[in-house]
Length: 201
Image (cartoon, rainbow, N blue to C red; front, side, top):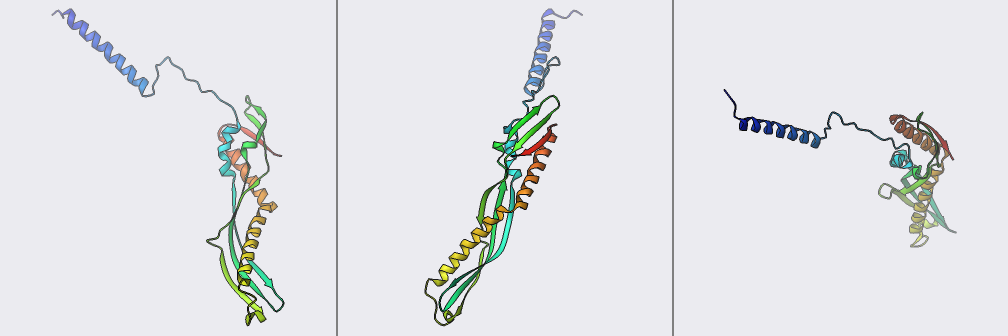
């Protein structure tokens, strides 16, 4: 039985249309023709690639202490005591780091880092508590003045802020921040296939 030429032409046209449709769907879904090749360019190491790690290199330290403040007069004194709670954050500003050497062929680099610095010192007023205010001497009978208690308490809070801030100068904490920074950077760059040498300014 002979097949009409119109039918043969229609079947060929439909087949061609289906092939084109399938190819377009494969391209739209992220596929590529068999002959196509893709290349990924390695942009190398830049400060912009490591800068988002700044938050991971931050060392936060909780501070707890007891502060006593005393106001002395001729006939007596007033003493106030606080339970101090605060937080100190030390970190490394990776935006100021610089690559001294970058060997792309062997994937080795030397990175120079700034020293850790205090990011903030915070006295937690919600958790800091006034234990009490006590008078001694004749002030037990005759108070040292209506403002004596307030002055003593305010002085205690100022001392508390100073104590929390002085924690940031601890050499051991600075070293902990350096160690934490080195661990974060080495782990990150090792995952990218790079060997890194870190130097502190």
